[in-house]
Length: 492
Image 1 (cartoon, helix red, strand yellow):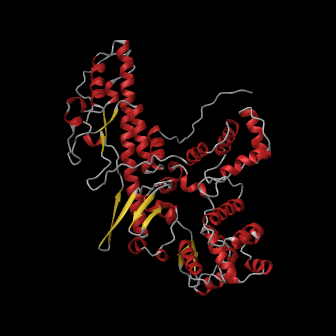
Image 2 (image 1 turned 45 degrees about the vertical axis):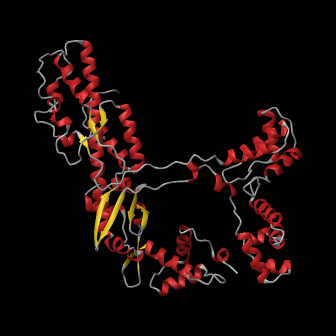
Image 3 (image 1 turned 180 degrees about the horizontal axis):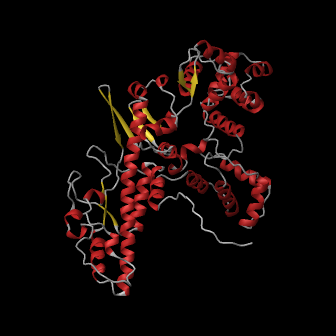
């Protein structure tokens, strides 16, 4: 049976300003610059501050009478008017620092990032294809094969599949034999090894090229190892290679030294600069001045924002005559744009303040590490620890730590890397898991490469140092450090 009743509910909803702030918090400085440019393009009421001193407390916007929160506008008493200017504004004047955003300091360096205009990897191969005396049919086949090479220079598609593609795409009926002939032409291009279908073929192409270019040097043993014992070579079963090839350890060592000089990804040296080069711009900079740490936000090339003076004047003009329906619509549009600009400037200011407070808390918490650079002095730290210090939500701290970098005297690091779980030692002291990883990495670096330490041996060493952890935990930390197993670390 249907019935009506009155019910109260308590709901928590985020305002548009809060959503904007959360989105700005999680993006790094490089993306923030693009986000500001996008907002300036979309909102004509927001513009860049130009020609003003940073430390000047009064700017053009503050000096103009129309910027005093529009309190000089005439009151308009109309019950039919949807807008009431008195409800939109406050009686107090808006301070100039609320209408502008200063995102830089005098110490910030301003520079432009250089861009390379060199030809790409595929363009380089296509240029070499044009130098070969091939008929039009084979030239089209060669261009299609080059287009299917990945950035490392490998052809990952089977030749049978390429034959079908050529028939449908270019109406060229071909077979595997003809494709192989054209592919062999491409495999003769620079850089050596390009056009290979797997790593083994890539290394063989490079070794054979070296043998042709340097007939005085014997590469036959290296070629034989890659050709006949490639599986044993990848697994570093050197004893099996010595036994089956009937060679000495010194001969094998010389052959391996030549193989290690080869490039397993020949296309990387000539691939597109925009895809391979990634520049890290730190969001924070920590200076060590005679033992005292100083923190600053890195706001390079960040524009200073303010509300457009012309839009402030338009708001005053349209508010004087609101009876006209056209003026009423225009007034609503101008108000919306100015509101959006205010929210964005305020969100940028809150973002900078939140970033500084959070990084300051992290710096103070890890003061011993940032003073010395010794990773063994890192304290266990989780998001909750910093959230309690700055009185912010854990999700806010997570957004700040996401994709942010801090520049120190010891290098530039991802902020998230300083957060780690704790582990209790035998004496009851809690240490960071990153400290254990550092000790584990040092043990592996100091090991004898001809007989590397196994995970069981590493576990014993750590237990002797007071770190009581299991072997599977050692294996997990080793994998997180991108260190292979003992067998793959073996060297002659």
